[in-house]
Image (cartoon, rainbow, N blue to C red; front, side):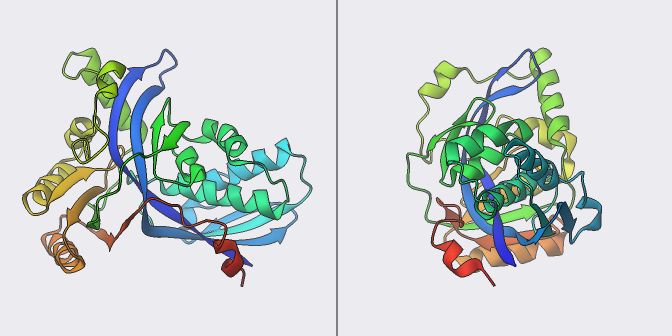
Length: 294
């Protein structure tokens, strides 16, 4: 059995630069990794089988199943894989949990089936299945353009702070948040961030936490709005990741972050929290494979 992590990501910033004719959104965003992760177990099998610790997420509807079936077909692989997902990242939380699971499964299959496709090929294959999958395959803190598939290394040093992730206990549909955002743009209540403006934005703490989707997410979820405001009042910096609903806050030390996590749960503002670091590398680096097999 092979057991591998699928880490949560956070968006360091997120600007929407265009709404395409096909309804997709052009973005300028950036990603870093966290220590919060799902865990995936792999065993050899004749077919693709996907189960999950949260039963309603298992089976053929799971993104891991869809990606592996397509990958298997593209390379005419006769083998299958039995995958079990220990789901620890909240759903619809802006942390890319499902996409991270799919990326880890794809990296595992690429090795186990001896396809050995390079990272660029894996990203090109996976991008149609989800805009967040490429950032996990890229494997480094990154800036993304297009719909998320055009990646380059993040050019600045990440903040050396303790990270608190806080989830209010309910998810937000990415499609729903973008639909609300589109309506705000159409009605003139929000203006797209122009590519020309993006070119002038400094890639450091000055843009950290800026998120064009925040207004829509807070309009759709008072819980996100309340959580975000409380964190802004009691931390060095706070923002929303992705399309929500997880909020991110930075603290000087672990004790401060842990104390805030306890307070949020006591106040009913968060049902899931994580305290840890912010990382510029995906945990599945080459050396990981030497110790991951059980």
